[in-house]
Length: 579
Image (cartoon, helix red, strand yellow):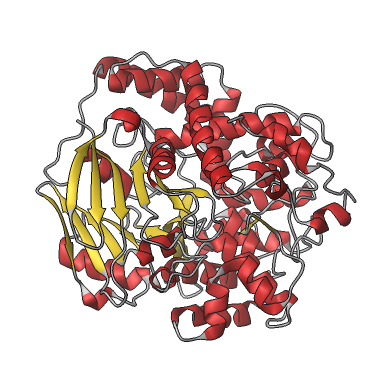
C-alpha cells in the first residue's frame, strides 16, 4: 500500500500513513499541491512552523518506463509567497518509489538554535540523527561525507549554506547516478523552507525493498516498449537533446531574436556561439568529460553531461541552457569556463541558477559588478557562503530583494520570481505562462517555446497575440499532469508530435495501478492540480493584478524585432483555470 511519511522536525515524531482519502491515487505535483492546499494556511509566513515541505515521486516513478525518475518538491514558496512545485531528477525519487513512499512531509519547526538534523530512511524505518560535521558544508562535501557514512548506494537530498541560512533563492540538491549533487529543485527558494525545518539532508537506502507490483505486467511492458519508441524516434528527444544537451537552444533562441541579453535589453547576443551547446560539447570532448548521460536511471534522452575544467578535472554536471543563459548573455559573460564555475558554485551553495543569474544582473545594474566580468561575478557569489557577509546575504535572497536593496528599477520578475531565458516580447506564448502560472515567473509551467520557436506541436506566431493565450493555457494543464507522473518534462516534445502518445501514457498508468485511466483523464488531472494551486494563491492574497509582466516589457521595444509586451492583465485571465 502506498504510504505517506510524516516527520515532525520539532518533536522528532515519525509516522507512516496510508495514502488514502483526498490523497489517494496522487503522485508528484498532484500530491504536493494537494497537501499544500489542504494542510498549509495560505496566509502563513513561508518560514513559519505552519508551512510544510512535501517531496513526492511521480505515479510512474520506480517503474521501468523510460524517463520516469523525476520528483516534485512543494510548499509555500519563501521567495514568492505563492504555492510552489519544483521538479528534480537524480536517484532519490526512484529509491522513494521503490519503498512505496509516495509522499514525504516535513512539518513544524524546531526551536531557535536547534542543531541541524539528517533524516535517514531504510527498509527498517526512518530516524532523525545529528551529523554536526556536515553543517555549514557545501553540498559536494556534505554529500561525500554522507556517502562515507551510509554507503555509496544511497540517494541524497541536501541543502547548502544558502538553505541553512534561509536565503530566499536557495535550492535543494539531489545526487545523480555518479554521486554528484548536481540535480536541483531550484525554483522558489524551497531550500530555505528545508533549512527552516533544520533538516540539512535526507538520505535514503532502498536496499532490500521490493518495487511495487504491477497490476498488469504484460500490458505495462507493451506500453513501455511503445513509449521508448516514441522518445527515441522524435528528432528533439532522440537526436537534438542527446547530442548537445539543452544548450542546443542557445544558437536557436539567439537566431530567433528571443535570447535575453544584458538584462532583457536585446534578443540577440553577439557572442552566443562562444557559449552554445556546440561549444560546450567541443570543450567536454577535448577535456575528456562526458557529453551525454542521464540524470537518473532509465533516462533514454541523456541530455545531461559532466563538464571538466581546462586541466581536465571535473567541474560541474547538468550544464543547462537556462543556467548558461543566466550567467552568459544575461550578464554579457562569454567565457564558458566562468559560466561553468558559477554553475558549480550554485550547486555547492544550494542556489537556483536562474534566480542567481538575474540577481547578479541586479548587482551589475547597480554598479556593484562590471557587465561581462565573469571573475568578479564568481568572487561575489562565493560570499554567499558566509552567513555574516551582508553582501552575500543580499545576493542569496534573489533578484527582487537585491533590486530593492540597491535601488534598481529594471527587475525581470513576476510574483518576485525571476524570468528565465526567453524574452516574452518575442515569445509571447511563454510570456503568457510567465504572467499566469501559479508559480511566479516560470517557463516550465507551460513551455510555449515549442510552438512559438521550435514549431513542435503547432506553429503560433511568437510576435503576435493570436493563439498565445490558448496555447499557454493548454500547456499549463498538460504540464501539471506530466509533473504528476514522474516523467521528465522533455518528453513533451515527443508527446506533442505523436498521435498515440497520450494513449500510451494512459496505458502505462492503467496497467501500473489496475484502473481504467484514459487520455481524457490526463487533462482532468492537470486541471485538478491547477485548481488546487490557483485557489491557494487566491486565499494567499494574489489577484489578477499580480498576473502581469514588469512595466519595462510594456514600455520598451525589444531589438531586433522591435516588439513590446501588449497583453493586459484582464486578457491574461483567459489563460487561467476557473476556480
